[in-house]
Length: 199
Image 1 (cartoon, rainbow, N blue to C red):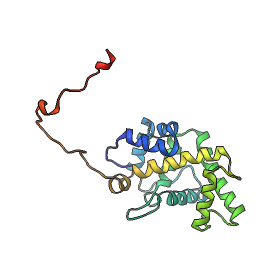
Image 2 (image 1 turned 30 degrees about the vertical axis):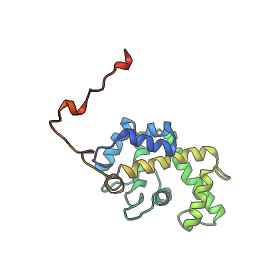
Image 3 (image 1 turned 180 degrees about the vertical axis):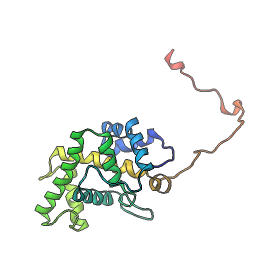
Image 4 (image 1 turned 135 degrees about the vertical axis):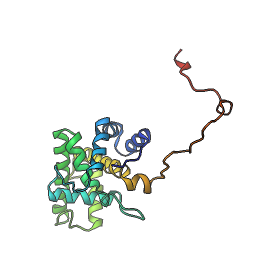
C-alpha cells in the first residue's frame, strides 16, 4: 500500500509472531506484495469485490478494534478492510476467500445469539468479548474458524503497516536508515564478509 521500501525480513518476523510462520510467508510472497502495491496505486474509488455490505462492515469494525486510532489513524481509517478484500480477491484461493466470508458470518451469527443484535450494532465491550471467544475457539466458534481468523488478523497488520500512515507515522521511518556516508576508507570498515564457512 505504501510507496516506501519495507524491510521484508522484519515484516515476516512481526507477522509470524501474530499469525504463524506459514501464514506470514504467504502474506509477503511476491504476488501478495505486488497486489498490495497495486491496491495502494488504485485505492481511490476502490469498491469491494469479495465481501457484501454487512460482512464488510463487520470486517471494518474488527479492523477498528484490532488497531484502534490513537494519535495516528487506526486500521479502519486507512481502509484495511478494503485492503483485505482486495488481497483475498487477488492473491488467495476461492476456498480461502470463502473461509474469510464464513468467519464474518459466524461472528455476526454468534453476536445475534449471544448479544441479541448484530455484531456491528453491539457495544464495543460485547464485540471484544466475542472476538476473545473466537481467539480461544470457545463455542460457538471452532478451531477452524479461529485459524481462519488468524489469517484475517495477519492481513490487518500487514495492511496497516504497509499503508502510508502505518509505515511513516506509526513506525519510525527513515528514507535511508543509518544515513549515507560516502568515501569511507576500507580500513575503518574492516574485512568484508565472505562465504568462507561454505569451504
